Length: 304
Image (cartoon, rainbow, N blue to C red; front, side, top):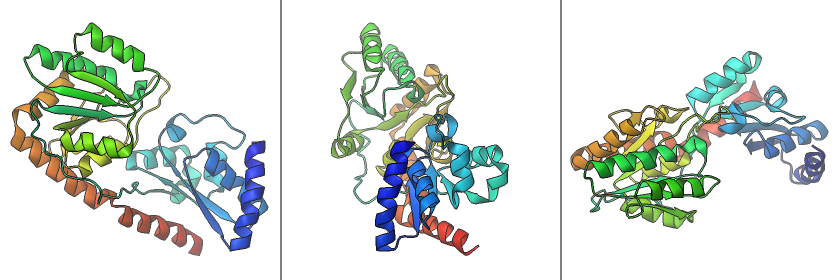
């Protein structure tokens, strides 16, 4: 952690100059470790938000998750699922671990038309095992076999891109399933506006890594899309079964295809789920609300 020590001294001196007494870092990684060392050399406390892999499959460092949790004024995590996980792992710090959902600026999102013909399935994420995109490709094959006309865009890049492309070709899906690569945020929003359904078929990878509170699901809800996902990590806190979308078992391409097909066949249901999802996003994920919660949690901890 020599680099973190160097950064800590450099940043700490600047913080002293401008009178900053507390730092909040995101992820229990580089930023949190730098904040840890700043607190060792300067009168500055720190807190951090732990997200997903930094909780479930943390990398080994001299200043690991245990030392960060022990030293932080308060630990924030994104979901009730992760809060329970951390409190059980660190019972001595349980009262200092709190769930605050990440916030999203809802204003830039335009409500999806949800009436494209043929319907468009959109999925967004790194092309890695825990996203479960291979299951979506297999589900698309099942939909094609059932005579469904549709398009599917799996947006992102990653180590499984070639493997997914080969499976798309082997299953004869070249005309309806595309891998357009990574896209800037404004183009992702355009895909969401054109979409009929958003799908994120998350699974737990062999190392225990999983999604916790995927921002892409928040964005789909903000666009008024029905969401099909799995009961993995904190996703059930976002997607409410039969209310804002459908949750299927991880790794179950048959169930995934069935949920998507149901939305294709019932546009009224799809619109209703999407509208409820938008209302849920406003209720839970407003950035203004969640920043206020974060500030209150940190300052209350300081007073105590």
